[in-house]
Amino acid sequence: MKLSLDANVFIYAYITGENIKNERKRMEWVQLHEKADVLYTEVLKGKHVVIIPSVIVTEVCAVISKLTNSEEEGISVVKEVQEYCVVVYESASVLEELLPAIAKVKGSGIDSILAALAAKENTVLITNDRRLHDRLRAFESYVDVRLLKDMSLDDIKLMSG
Amino acid sequence: MEADVVSRVDMLEREVRRLKYMIEAKTLHEHIIGELHRVKAIDELEINERLKKHELLKNRISSSVVVEDPQAVLDEVIGDRDEAFS
Image (cartoon, rainbow over all chains, first blue to last red):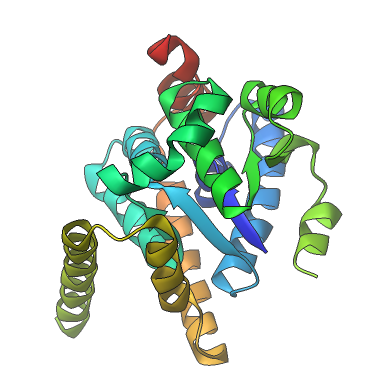
């Protein structure tokens, strides 16, 4: 299956959350990690192909660097994402191709590029951003969008066929 | 030492691919077709290698987290896209 993953899904996949002290927050994070982990493992196994714009890679780098207070760790994660995912760099020609879909989404720059790429490449967009999910559900039915929080582990496993 | 060299070569290869892509200014479709071929796992051995490397990186990153509330950082850095662009 072709997927587009939002930055938050990558973050949940890379951080187990086991060291979060607050029990409620730890349980919430660990549940999201388990789902993102299964999903990303299937990507590494070649069951899914991930197609993402480079702005998502930028966000992943920023968040991991901040969470670990280490620029090197942010870059390490990005290198792995670049190795196993299809990253689309926003060149002039690519932007030109995505503009019609970007105009339809009417969201922030990053949301628009992510959703436009998902629409153009007919991927399933998985995010844990409810606002983005609800907006695309409401206005852009041509994007197949799923909210990680609402997906069960069985849903995720079924996607691999 | 050998691992460092391999890692550096990998990094340079990725950089060359990125620069080549930018210079050639491929269409989106052409780029994706080329990349789909690149990211495809070749065999079981390569898949196991990928999983092993990822597990090591994931555990290292997870144990390096220095904040008490990662969700708050996630929300702070990428949770306000609308505000940032409105």
